Image (tube, rainbow, N blue to C red; front, side, top):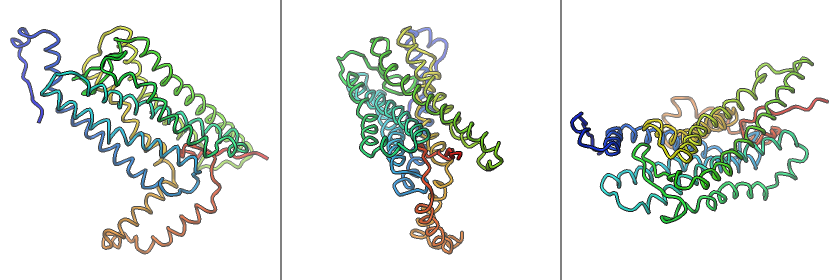
Length: 365
């Protein structure tokens, strides 16, 4: 599907440096497309599995938690269902035409909007976790259904307003198709002030909120664990849940997003580009956060896994009863269904917005 090029030393002498670099990038295109497709499949399948579970009630998850997590799942799903197909489509068009980049402006706007929405959504989840842990008695009045939906609307609508200048071909910032990353990217060096303002309004505020909220929750959980251990009532199976959940969440966030933001600022300030594979990795690395979120925000939670197994059993019984009988699911499905109902009705809803919320803080009387 994609052309390959064999560049010899004599060919290089007849080409300019820019043309040689472009041809060299095109030789790696098939490998890059394969990586993008594999990443897109992983993100899509992971988030489809999440949607199957959180569209119904899950034990220990409040209504507000499900709203925020549905928003996060929608943003992560857009990586695999919208961002990747759009950029691969433009990549195919660029094989045949180097005309005006009007389409690239629209695609770049979609890319930046979904990236920003994902960061804002992660920040709102951390904010809800913080309120749930430190203000449990005021939680119902502080996080009403209306305020929850307003926060979700902000996470989706504010990036549309903030990034709207990217859509205009003759606007305040230029856009180009990068053969290194196979993505329509704004040319950040064409408007340094706008680029830096985006980082100051999106990445840095979200990072500050997430870091502060999760660090406070982790410290509170650590103090609580020490108190429980002091009084001899610590649960061995849950002795370090906060570190097991919050540390991977923050590590994944900074690992996936910081390189992209750093290269973005470097390109804007210096006007120089980074090496081909460095650009490819840092541009697509944030999308992998869409798959990691499925693990850290969902699969770590025991109630989520239990509900997912129950849904799989129901699907197997409906689509292939013979296979279900082979695994012995037909005899246990009814019992697990009743157990799931009892879990939903009798469990104390843990005040932890981000589902990875097994770090409920117990009050010490």
